[in-house]
Length: 383
Image 1 (cartoon, rainbow, N blue to C red):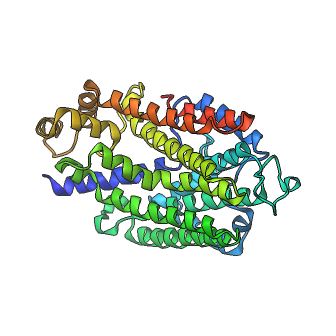
Image 2 (cartoon, rainbow, N blue to C red):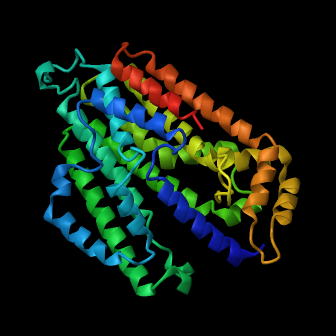
Image 3 (spheres, helix red, strand yellow):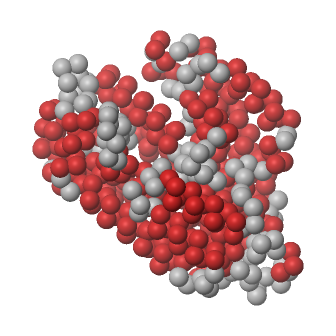
């Protein structure tokens, strides 16, 4: 059904999803969210960095940045990604590292860590845990940069110069690989094989999750797509595995027991899934007037809606929302999805994951770090 059109829509939707991943959480309640982040950063001593100073000040990255400047004036998505790193008004870029640091402080020192001394801690956090937070940010940033690669098979003149797109792709591959290589070097320097195994498996999960995302495009969604259970599994791979396993690794670094590691993993997992649901829900809960924001047909509210109405009625609704030019009328489809219980079901699932994250953190001692983690888990249910 209109394969060329849906392929084009899919590429545009994928591009917009790539830009949205710069923020861990949505822009809803931005003033409240900014306060939550600001308060949390004060607790861990100083803000996390989306990449370590060693990486930022290196000659190699300076050379990459110089070449990326040549993309100014083009439409390559790498430029938007780079711009997001430089300016992020919603204080969202560093959230993964921040959560790792907060969990590290909330758990405190471990009596089993004989070779670690409390005097080595800065603001209640060991240096190795801070290094892990930086590594987590580097990995996340590397994958964001790699997501900016343009599929040249679907390139058209309206996308800009083919030469610019090819050059931008080379820079995206080079800079993403460079960040990932630095992350792997830092990971090896932690001298903990279990942590290396955890984070390496998270990188593998990310790759697998992005592969699933690329296959579950809009065209596949029209034909039926994935169900809610499969969506949740794939969302964890692409959005939750890195944070969940980084939280677990932060506990392992200082020899916390298996139960503490399990709870840290649980918090990171459910926080990430709640975030993804929050992000998917934004086009359906925003009340701003004007042209509605386009959304993915593989987003959680649409999947719930499709499950509620059934495949036949869903196909009818898609046909009714298709214009004479074989383009999807998002405003009409948005109204259709909002008229059923798909949106409320996605909200309920978001609240469920928020509650599970809150439940996991209750086992840690009461502290300002734990309170900050509770505020973050509660914030993902604010729309």
